[in-house]
Image (cartoon, rainbow, N blue to C red; front, side, top):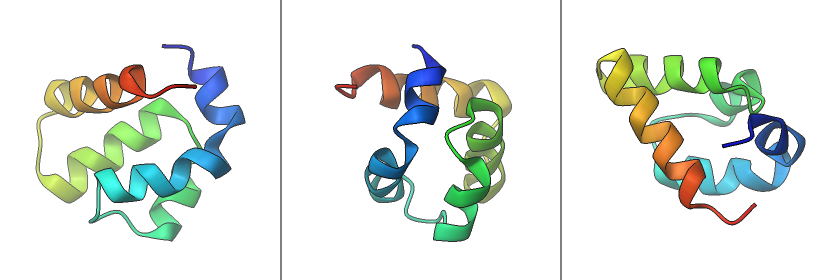
Length: 67
C-alpha cells in the first residue's frame, strides 16, 4: 500500500473511512490526515484493539480500496 496516495486522496477517502470506523469523528479523521500511524492509533484507541490488530485492519481496508 502506498500511503502517499492515501494521504494525497484523503479528502475523498475520509468519508469511506468514517463509514468503516464509525466511532471516529470528523475531527479524528482530520487529525489523521491520511497518515497511517495516526489512523492506526485512532482505531486502536477508539476500538480498544491491539496495535498489530489495528495495523492489519487499516492496511487491509486501504489495500482493498481502489485508489
